[in-house]
Length: 301
Image (cartoon, rainbow, N blue to C red; front, side, top):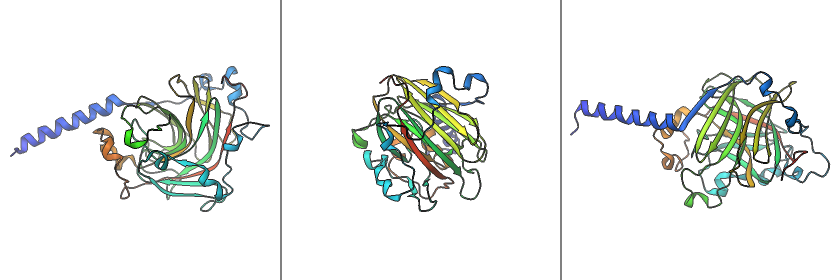
């Protein structure tokens, strides 16, 4: 039998190990993203183009204005394609909110080897993908639960599926809007994940609708955002030569990290991916006005 003292010591060691794992795998930065460094530079002007369909763009057919519910089956769900738990609480097109895709997740998060709801289309080569999204809590303008955000993600596919998937092989990048560690404070989150090592950045945002964009040209991935009546601002620039030519690109939403944080701290990847947390405290409603795909005016491939 363990004495009370030994139990307390073991618990302290376990907590310390968990914290060490969390610290080694998680680098969080708070950034303002103001100043000329984050203006759209001269060589990035082609990334700040109008997202409306132009000419004979071969990616335009992937776009969706969410005015017709019949387009929803054209979006692949990560849970269906690769066999992960379906963490989507509510999903519809032009029903709850006419002209919008409405997505509400159960407690979940995107980090390292951990997945959350993801609706995507496969895109090969260079692309620009843009969405206009409104993120709120269930009863307030800003979600009250930590890390409740929604936006765009580009991910290397795992065609081998869940059965043959291995930890340490996740490669993706995203930009989202909602509330991160502020819990009730409006924020943007960007996250760059290479070989399941995630580096995230949080920035302040204003309330209301916002446009988010991911642009891929060659090996460079650029994340941009634009609030109503504002110019495009760059949120992140990353070189990702490791990413394959074809990516999964689309919409993500996640919420209620507090109900799952011990899975991350103790790296319980397998346990996380064997259940849906229906008894958590999700607090995220995301409304997507559209998703538009296009080729960059200057493309390297």
